[in-house]
Image 1 (cartoon, one colour):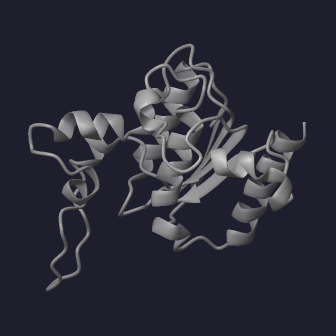
Image 2 (spheres, rainbow, N blue to C red):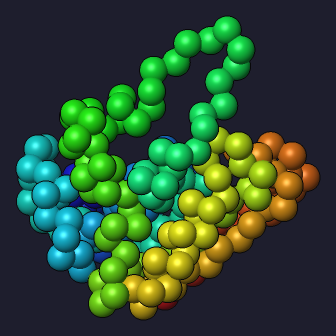
Length: 189
């Protein structure tokens, strides 16, 4: 975000009007970006110092498609693994640290941690399949509730019967259109 702001003229963008949009792991990162900017008091350690190491990191709007919002509750969700396949534990791979350290690391990596009363987050559009077997729909419900408690604007749109990546949804075009419309509205007003 700092890079985009610093080189906005070269990139041909308005560095004062930045929104983020991600799906799945990208949705998780988009939510973190929206919640750990200048309005957050708990996220200074996440700001980083590499690359363009200083400057504002806040965004004006977030679109999060089926992202993880609370790693502490997701740890109890069984990962779907095809028979005969061996996968590393995703929590260990993402969080690192020792078993004792992981609960604190999971909280630090969870967007819901930073949606606190008075934090005034940017507007969020959360779109999630209700039958998501990889990242449960409840993850977006948790984030929507946390954003509401933080005096933020959260729009939660369930995609009835859809799995991860909206498998089973008959109208992906409408989901994309809604997301573009949301960002256009919040970045041009």
